[in-house]
Length: 570
Ligand code: FYN
Ligand code: ADP
Image 1: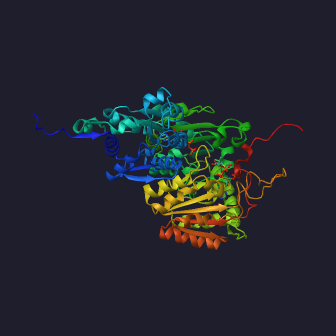
Image 2: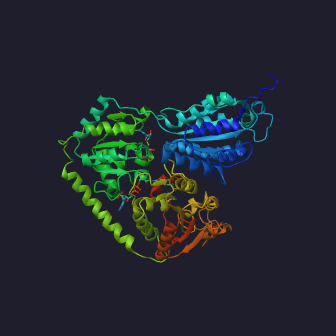
Image 3: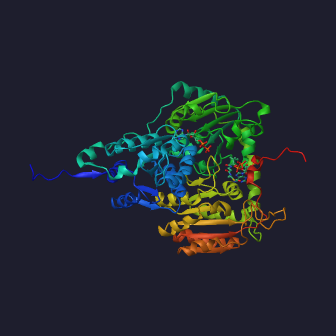
């Protein structure tokens, strides 16, 4: 009748928010603007944590890191065209790293975009995102929002995790529908990352190969860290007695001080091992593609066992004798079940030879770390950080740069799983502040960001974000006045400085002070130690400008050989 109350309605904004909440997503990293400004306000009003950044790439990196740390897709929310493109770098990087994230981007009017009639921020975002991520979807109707978000979550988390793009045109947010029908249209995703149990014959093949090995080696990658199968991985390593090598983000899966760690004898074990078990690590550039000098290929090929969830990863670079396809938790559990009391530990000849080399390297390193040169070098500054991380093993270390990355990787021991976030598979610069913000937000733990001065520049403006949310992040800028080092000269005679050189004696600490955080200018290891200890204890946003000898770095750190050198003759 005429007096019947109008049926309650719900709009696209709230359907998106409700769909996320229904799937236990509690945080959005993003940057407001047309057409998603109201979405950020409403999400906050509905109880989601909304962390706003100064540039979308860092919001995207934060989402990616949150995905890695939590096994829930990290959400990044951006505006159309340029904001979308800024977020896309992070989405592509997340996909490359196998981190689950969803880039949700507002987009302009479809009718105008598709006819290329020149809309505000016009861009066919779905088409552009598609080749750069794992999956891409667009939702046009409010009643499909539930399905769109469900598909995005499944695509991000299931199988090999990765980045997903979700395109939400401006008009969608304003659409309304019957509230009850709207609620019903939402989907709570059941079992978004289904276990994949390895085939018993694959497990047997792997165990047989491992049993026959004289010089076995386990290689743990960031897939193993992501999988959160920490106890079984440790039990497998310890029960088999096989030496292991952690890739950089697998450090801490077992404490780096573990007797079976072969990290300090890396070259030796890669060359000498006869059977190598890869757990969530790809044979890409970081492992010299499983061949060549690094693997002493001239002495004959290694035999590989590879645990991975992606069957197409197998044989990507060299033949894999024993693929074990499944999720790492299930695969390691299955292998572990095959290790009984009769399992023969690796020959003492092998473990003894590793220990000998390792001890030599550790002693050499101890001497280097004890020195207190003035100005500081990478080693003296990192020895201070190493001690602080030892005292607070729950702290999260974020690390980028060239020399700053390479030295920190071997010097700063990690003690717990998923406490180290770094440049990953691409060796990308610019993850620093985004990863740090995510680490602080999702774990509440202190974060220590060890940053090359060049690397820091990519995301430095986000110190404002760190101060705004009062996050327990201590950024340490290794300031040696340039990319790699600060001593390059322009040989051409023109007035510009060399391409790799920055303003000398810059005061990055002032940047933090500008937003109310603590800035410290540290020229000695003692000053650095004091400032870092205070920062970790207080949880106040801090930036320590650590002055490093400008001659101390080398070109590209330990990957100098990747620089092409011309064969051209004069
Ligand atoms: C390692 N080592 C140690 C220790 N740990 N010595 C003493 N004490 C400790 N604790 C030794 C180890 O045995 C190696 O020596 C050497 O230190 C270096 O070890 P690392 O860092 O593990 O190995 P390497 O060869 O540098 O690593 C290969 C890599 C790694 C490609 C996996 O470099 C990496 O993750 N690189 C990422 C680089 C990147 O992305 N850069 C950003 C772009 S910068 P030997 O055994 O004697 O070899 C743009 O310019
Ligand atoms: P690293 O750089 O540390 O060597 P990579 O990123 O190269 O590690 O390798 C990670 C691998 O782990 C990828 O091949 C990915 O498919 C795999 N992976 C990720 N998560 C899982 C999981 N839960 N179960 C099995 N494999 C996984």
